[in-house]
Image (cartoon, rainbow, N blue to C red):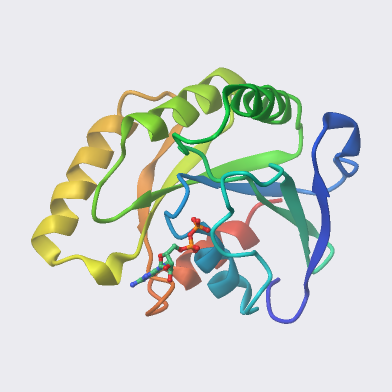
Length: 195
Ligand code: GDP
């Protein structure tokens, strides 16, 4: 599903730009700097597929990639920039809500959470949107190589407690490191079984 068969399709800024909902789709969401670009690049084995660290001022696009032409992989813009101007944030939230609620082929969202910090209030906001849209989501801890086992346990604990409050949450958490490759096979397998 992944090797050499991942292509950038398009960046979308409005609902009418979405590609046809003709195949299973999974999306990646996460706070800015959580390691989303790195994870997508590591998963797909391509160096510059997802651009690193979206800058606050940049147009917020929903980026679509095709996996072996049988699935869509969707990169949602990073959230949680305090500096972003309010109208921009609001426009983005409208698009995000419309996308999540109106995408019948969306099978699962991966909500990326930094292993050092655990789920934060800003992550809970997106989880609430996912609950409302009835999109099953799964927490993916990033940068696992950066934390000691004890701290990792603590942030897993925090994250489990948060997930328990959200009806759309899938209980199993995936631990990943884009740097070391941890968890990548698990994620690929989860995506591959979506049909
Ligand atoms: P994004 O804004 O969510 O797309 O985050 P990036 O992928 O650009 O990553 C943000 C920063 O974290 C960069 O400096 C990355 O090199 C670093 N980073 C991302 N993933 C990992 C990881 O698994 N391990 C380590 N040690 N650093 C990572």
